[in-house]
Length: 177
Image (cartoon, rainbow, N blue to C red; front, top):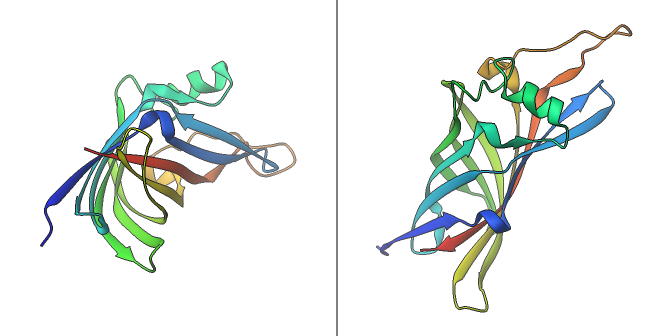
């Protein structure tokens, strides 16, 4: 058995983003600006990964100050009372050399639900300073109402202002510690 390898997320080369439908016709993108993660693997075998990820709820950013303030409010993340969103992995299934399924527990506002995410492994590379990096694209979908993020507004023509489905899309670069 190989020794455990510890990886940390490189925030300057990673982004944690999400999209929701607005007015049922366009996607609005948001991101978390402050986040951290540690990943433990056996050597460079990411199918053995144990992942602990945290995002600062108050760091949500959508490009609209009013919308960001609303997202931080009790209608959505309630960032004052619930400062962090957390993801802890439960299992990784390797489907091919580059494709994995990641299962784990996502906690938002003290509500924890199981999620399944698709992970594409981009590869390993040493940067110009000899530091080993690993790249991943993580994607999936959740229903925000499963975490009690229920706020919405009905539209005159039918439908709702904000979709229940949230698409998660993350580009992650890990640094070998």
